Amino acid sequence: MKARKELTATGTELRKVTSERNALRIRLAQAENSMRELASASRAEAQLRAEFVDAHAASSAALRARISELEVALAAASRPPKPEEQVSLRQIRGIGPAFERGLLGLGISTVSQIAALGADEIERIAPLIKARADRILRDDWVGQAKRLLGE
Image 1 (cartoon, rainbow, N blue to C red):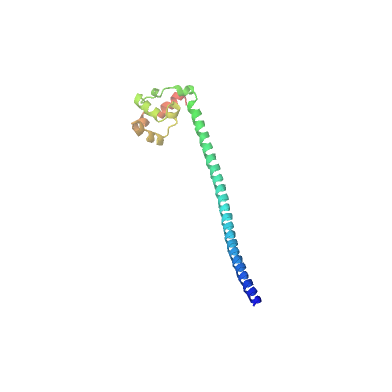
Image 2: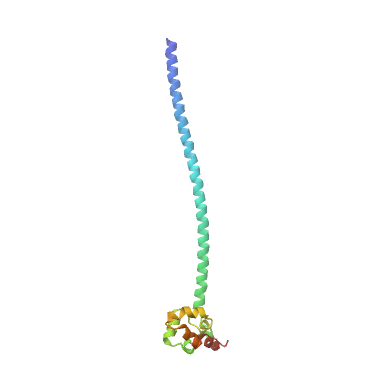
C-alpha cells in the first residue's frame, strides 16, 4: 500500500513536472517567436534608416546645388552693369516709359537682353508688357539693340 501511495505521489509529481515542462516549452516557443519578430523589426528599421540616409543625402545634394545656382544668380544680378548695359532701354525707338517699366518688371533691364530676344520670346513677352509682337518686330527692337551694342 505504501508503494502505491509513493507510486501515486510520484505519478502526480511526474504530471506536475510534465505540465511545467510543457508550460516552459510554450514560453520558450513564445520567446523564440518574439526574438524572430524583434530581429525582423530590427532589420526593417536598419533598412528604413539606410533608405532615409540615402534620401537625405540626395535631397541635401539637390538643395546644395540649388543654393549654388541661386548664389550665382544673385552674384550676377548684384554685379555692376557693364558699360554697354548702361545704355537706357528708351534709346531703342518704340520703347517709351510704359514699355520700359514693363520690361524692367519682367527682368529685362539691359540692351544686351533685348538684343538676345528671339521671335518666340518676343511673342511671349509682348502681351505681358501690353504691346503687339508685330510692332516690336516692325520697330526692330532686337536690331536696334544690336546696333547700340556695336554688334
